Length: 383
Ligand SMILES: Cc1cc2nc3c(=O)[nH]c(=O)nc-3n(C[C@H](O)[C@H](O)[C@H](O)COP(=O)(O)OP(=O)(O)OC[C@H]3O[C@@H](n4cnc5c(N)ncnc54)[C@H](O)[C@@H]3O)c2cc1C
Image: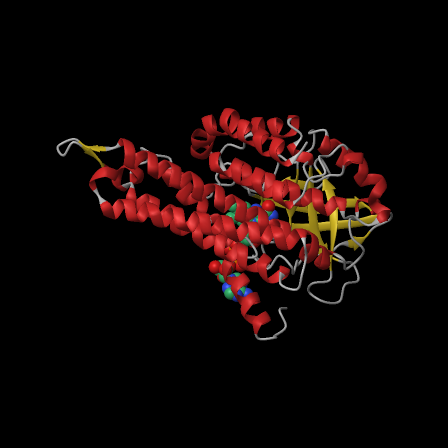
């Protein structure tokens, strides 16, 4: 599969599977198993996996393109996809000792039969995902993990979870290790419902681990290697993925607003809203400018990821921080431009508006990213 084919498959799925049911799934808070099945059948679940595992061997550019395309139709599904791709990347980067356990799972992912996700955030350390409170305890051939994970996208739907916990002998608050916990492990349970303001159809429920046994070959990183993996493997692509979700939401908002301004009429004036009001045209133009600005920023980040350089981490931090703001601004403007029609849910803009608010509170949150950027400019330690 090449870049264009992957994005066109995503467009096809967005059109035929996501768009028709996004509104109802949002209302019902229903996770779309059909969407995951289609992504699996099309080969998109194994997008970044190497060809020898059966994957497409593609990179960040295609990941962003596919994600933005999915998000235009349904941001909940796009976020499920982002979390899956990041969990897969964590497994691909696993230490050699995990190959025996992880390789068959990666093959299942490439074959489209396995969905994974990240379970980093904990109720106790909240958005500071780099500092889990849970600690793995050595137990025979492996460890036991007890943890209260919060906001786990695809909770109860995924076939596996990449879980963080402090290493058994870790001394500091970031001395964590990543483990793969497969669905069905004794002690693993969904510990509540997901009833969010936005991204309502992505099952971001809490997950409890009660003395879950994880065999040693399911330990993905060395002891204490969780934090570097979060920073080097997960963070860049997670920030790219959430930024791509924001871009998809902005594109959908521009498209729906344009259509409303063309089609809604002031019948007494014999004009459409767009023909009648320059203020609305100016706000639509601002939405377009912000959306294209975000797109350019994402392209710049992709370029930095494809050709890493000194400024790459700064771009990783900046892009997600900016994307969260842009998505909120563009969808807020869309709500105002489309007036009561948007407010009364005659249009699906209000779903975009609610979904757009998730990016900035997903860790690293917009505030934390600004903290990191400010500290790094001043030469202060980040943690
Ligand atoms: C839809 C959705 C899906 C999610 N999916 C996942 C998932 O799959 N896996 C996962 O592990 N987690 C996931 N999360 C969790 C997410 O990453 C955050 O951990 C969570 O949103 C934090 O919420 P909180 O109320 O605990 O935030 P808090 O930590 O209580 O933050 C409250 C406020 O304080 C600000 N703040 C916190 N620390 C700082 C700081 N150092 N400097 C400045 N400001 C600060 C924050 O920006 C925020 O505005 C998801 C969250 C959402 C909403």
